[in-house]
Amino acid sequence: MPRASKQQARYAVGRCLMLWSSNDVTQQGSRPKTKLYVELEGNLSMKEKVVVDKAISLYTESFGDPAHEPIILIMGAMSSAVWWPDEFCSQLAKMGRYVIRYDHRDTGKSTSYEPGQAPYSVEELADDVVRVIDGYGLEAAHLVGMSLGGFLSQLVALKYPKRVKSLTLIASERLADADPDMPAFDPAIIEYHQRAESLDWSDRDAVVA
Image 1 (cartoon, helix red, strand yellow):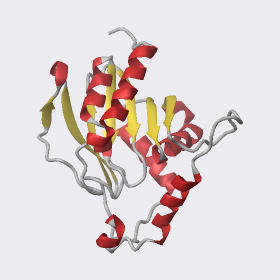
Image 2 (cartoon, one colour):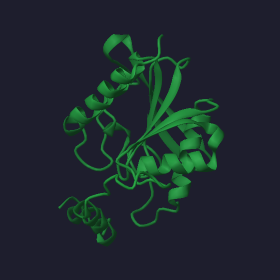
Image 3 (spheres, one colour):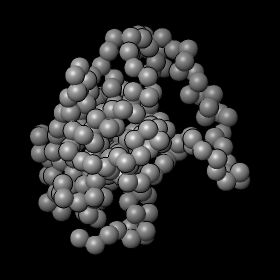
Image 4 (cartoon, one colour):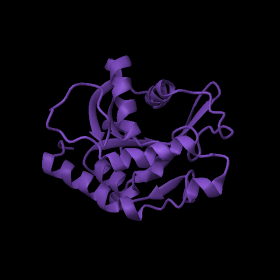
């Protein structure tokens, strides 16, 4: 299959953003019920796989032909894989990509811990990306990260450069110098997310208020 053009790639990302608000996620950690194989447009199918490494289980889903170029979609904090819409994943797969999305720990169907007892760091979440790469028997993959997912993607590229074919960062903090004219995050957005530090995560009503 021919390589996707820049115009096609922009279209796919645009579809992702358009579908964002309609994605079927109602609360943190929830997932729509799915069968093992869900038929999508173009006779593509979504396949489930659980990657296990010692005490860590990472729930993943793949779209497209494993022989095609692999892309791993890495979502932001407190967000499971379904924040990458099915149609977006299917469109990428139809353009000749093997698309993999997965649930971070403490989201979706991956390993979860008691509130306030998570025994892992951001660096270890970056290692989870490599666990997914290994779980699919890949030497390397293209990484597409949203928000925290972009931060994790950069950590993986720095720590495991041979496992990363390319980086695509969306709404993510950079780990290197960039164009000084590039706008920073709006302070209101930073303040909004900082409130998460003071929440009692064992109190569901306080979290969803």
